[in-house]
Image (cartoon, rainbow, N blue to C red; front, side, top):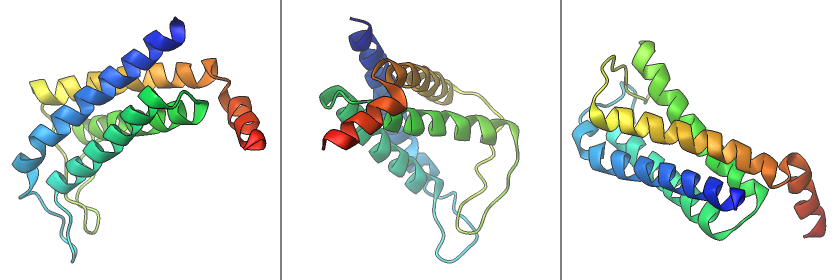
Length: 142
């Protein structure tokens, strides 16, 4: 029952991540990096959407410790990036745009909370599913 609840939290958090990034992507297409070629923040949002969607489906369908680890990396990475660019003006990095945004608005807050909750639940799920031993055990039996 605990595994099911953890999976539901991960899936719900990643679903919110998918929705928010897909919904906001067009609004950030004009924010581009300085390099050539340059990447827009909207394109990065679409990449996050795709990664979160893949992780969501895998956690929902494939009940293995590696899927929990993948979900942790996607959700935790998303949460880390939104917090970094909220509090630090990193600036543009090559083809990546300057994504500094010191404000909180509804979609950004929903995304940050959902990613944080999904990351914590995925990390707990990873250890409940056997952690690194689960990764090794599954790899050895393949």
